[in-house]
Length: 494
Length: 100
View 1 (tube, rainbow over the protein chains, first blue to last red):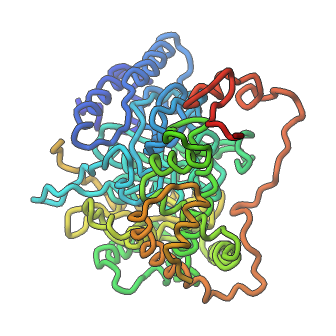
View 2: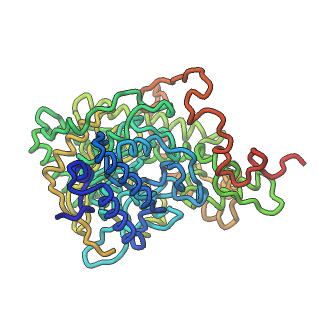
């Protein structure tokens, strides 16, 4: 029999429903895999084997009683430590929230538990989701399960959802939640050879998700393949009156409607993404993707998104501005860390607490955000960025008058080594060049594995869709998946 | 526009983050590098363009005017609200003395 931990969401759920194995056996197998990998990969900040077993026991009891089972019944998952989980420490990978035990459950995690999923633990991430390599976590780096052949240098699992990507790629979790502000689901998925989807802004409730940049933050699914992502996203999405930007729309039956036939569909290839000096392997995988979608019946159309080059600088004004405002709540008064030097007053306590609790990248972004919002600079930086954001979104609107989906690479390279880019913040920011534009426009986008580069490391292809058209994104991604036939896995060394 | 040590110290004070002299001298070139890079946005012609306010069209909702309509976000939650406070006192958030 295949190893249970090799299975994804659909296979586990169906196996549990059929009685091939029990949910408790599944949870036990993944708990053991998590425990064995934790010292080497550091994918989790806390593990919760008892929660996984508790959810599994309920599924097994429901099945024995003949009750209907949920769409994620018996599937133990990893929960990014940005989602508030009642009674289980939630840190956003920051010292400022160490020990914080939410008194309530986030909407997204509650929906997953309601669908029958269980929790293996809280996954490591870049601190407050600010990073592209998981190196800004206050709880240590996540080590990618991937290595370059013949080389033991630790590689980045991507970020900010680096614990999520590492756990799914290492097969210590069949799926994981992620959040995506500027690429934090898609880039780590690409780096680790898994699939990940960020839905349209507003599809998944942000209630109970630690806020980074509220106009961009969106939860999504990370899993082995497109079908598993569709199943999981369907369980996560839905209107929530507790989030003022939640979309009041029914959740479509994405899984039941999956269809890889691209006949009659037009796929846009934006010329501005073909950067000068592009990595030849990334360029080749993009060409492969174009050929695959053509093979699936699609018509390929060259398009223009003229403001693409301004997306990154726009993002690095808007996201820090929103972060500086959102993170004002960490003040040492209501929750989390308090640093009260002897004889200090209230203002000194705020400043000392925030100095001790936030990591360097978080401070950097709060400082940039504070500056671009400050009197005298607001119009030159923030208002200008919001105007350019309008133009970037308009580029997509115009393009989607002619095409159904857009195909681009997910990231400019395969995984880099830990430490390789962390010395220069700007160089790290440039890693988001292909993922940020869709975030600024609030569009659904997905990364699927395309193949391996010359270093034997995975590369991802990204499908960007119209607002609300997750189905179009999933379908094109499925067409790519069927032709890429990506089956590479990291060799187990942990 | 570029920032100097005094400006960065002012930003840190506005952001309520205590910084040392060493922090400041490390931050000045970093922030200047980032600010110089984002300044390319100035070359974009935005004549007649409205700043974005909502990325996906949506409308503001009002909840029903009912006390504790949603028990999760309603009142009577004092203990839950204080559960993670570093220094709760007599059912309140405790802070250092503000009035001398």
